[in-house]
View 1: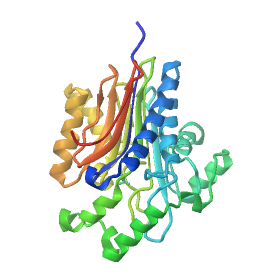
View 2: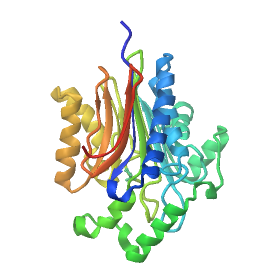
View 3: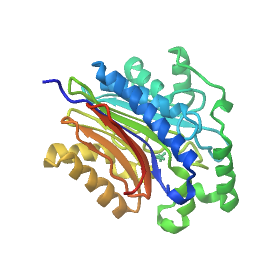
Length: 319
Ligand code: ASP
């Protein structure tokens, strides 16, 4: 019998409430999710790899200015877009990541090139840009990433409290409320292909008003992205907490060492461990049987999936 295929995508978790959304905007968000799913599914359906499927799906969302990745990324405190991304192939545990790049059009493809061509796993800043140039990755002028919306978000955060990027975990949730509202929108994808292999990818602009070369979980293998022969995971949320909990790898470990199902392992990390520590966010995950889990602790998460039957399902709010 033909092995099942499955693909899930996310476009970030956060304070996404229906009352602040117009029908047209909601449709635009959903249509990008659908396009990502359709392009990824076309690859899987033709027997293509999970790795190719997650890369193409994330590229679609990076190109969509509504999401905080690639074009439309949020701004740093000094008014730049610094992009982070990672990708992992569960088949052989190969992985690649980049952080703090400013001129690579599709950071996820640069992460893949790092995985396949650099002999390393994680390249940052100028070195990563130099590597990308050397290997012919498509570049973009810094103003390609600019969107009025994200620029205004930076001004709003600065006006309210320019120190807000100091992620003082001791200061409690309330003082960081606005910051939390501004910081989600990362994109990601997980897939299972016909050969039973899984892959995961994540890409982000990070958080509005970030400073000092801050890097979140999205480009950190084991924190924001992980894939092995049991599952593939891509996270979104308050990066500092995802790093501290090694969320993505912990899901895989709960399955491997404790025999948890995908649903139980993802529930444990996102709905128990993460809030216990004071963080929030969500993830998408797939296992070898084609089960998909998409838990989130926030009010909403842009998300969607498609399985072997080709039916594309997208959603935004909590049910
Ligand atoms: N996890 C990302 C970060 O902390 C943000 C997000 O998911 O929106 O950089």
